Length: 348
Figure 1 (cartoon, rainbow, N blue to C red):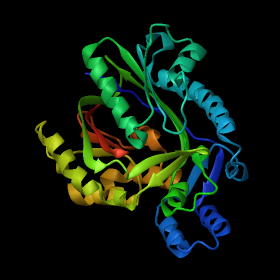
Figure 2 (cartoon, rainbow, N blue to C red):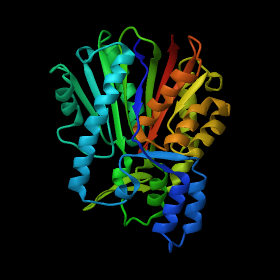
Figure 3 (tube, rainbow, N blue to C red):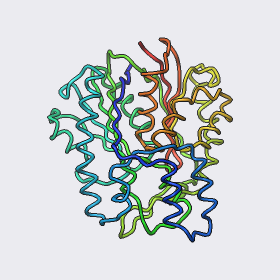
Figure 4 (cartoon, rainbow, N blue to C red):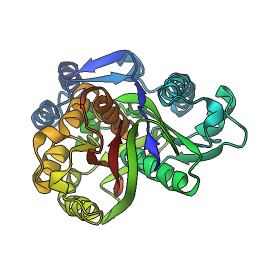
């Protein structure tokens, strides 16, 4: 069975704290009719700090779509160099051992995909297969793992490299006064990751099964409005109630494999916000300590989109003290509303 090896995650050096975010909200939106509500929501996001690609005052400027795209593409390749080399080292493989390259990113659009740039830049084999995933947002990390498992089940001797690059700060729109837009500006951070799935061998999370679920008629809950100034992120408050219908789907997925979700040893959940994690704990009837690493990721990095599940996984590699055979679920949640789930076993 295929195994996810230890991921490598890189965040930018520039940091914005919750206090800075609150001060910024007051400075930029002093006459907003919902200012007190916005400040209260920001205080309750649980996000103590985030990392952003550019210094704060630079990030607040909008130099135009063309310049933002150039910054994104250049930075994406620089970050990719670092995370890929370290992820391959973690998996004890080289670029020549990779058969499929998956890249997830929802914060820019490159044509050709970043997969082609990475293959040429780092010297991957020319017959390396490419799978860019650009429109699943925060769910893309879970989807990439599931597609990698499908591939490795078909080709057991092959290896897959998953690269996730999310620079959410490059989506900032200075003229956006919507509550959802302002809240997302206070929640999202920037990061990049890489993780190898080995078809054979390795130490880490063995992926046993995967599934997907789309909540009907929720396409407008998380969306982009495409305007002359680029992507404008739209966040509907109804998102916070989506874990109630998704939780039974998770429980039934686990039951189909002869397990009880309440008895699983760990959970690697996307950090959409504290309400998302609180509801998963509540509706799955699991102990709060089983989402500890997701809460830590939210507090220290904010919502880093498709990178989240790999950062939570990295923390588990280093701190969880899992016993061989421990079972758990990974869940990524994103626009659609989409849930991407897989069932794992820790292999030491």
